[in-house]
Figure (cartoon, rainbow, N blue to C red):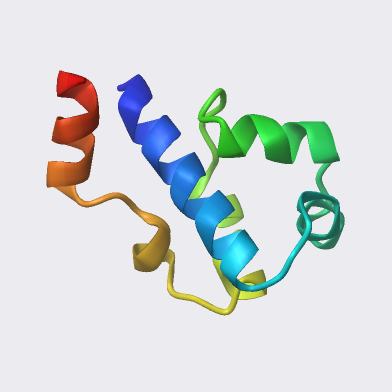
Length: 79
């Protein structure tokens, strides 16, 4: 379901911006290459649950805040 990855990536990007992280800074703290973080945010890759929890911890939010609601995914799939 590609729209799920895209919506998750957009939520990660939005939270990262709200928390004042650069993409480079968040990637570095996660132990990821900046280009891979960009691919996550664009929804080009699927991440593991472990990585989701690590990103959430660094962004000081619950993983559920980053996960798309079902109606968000459905809406994205219809567009």
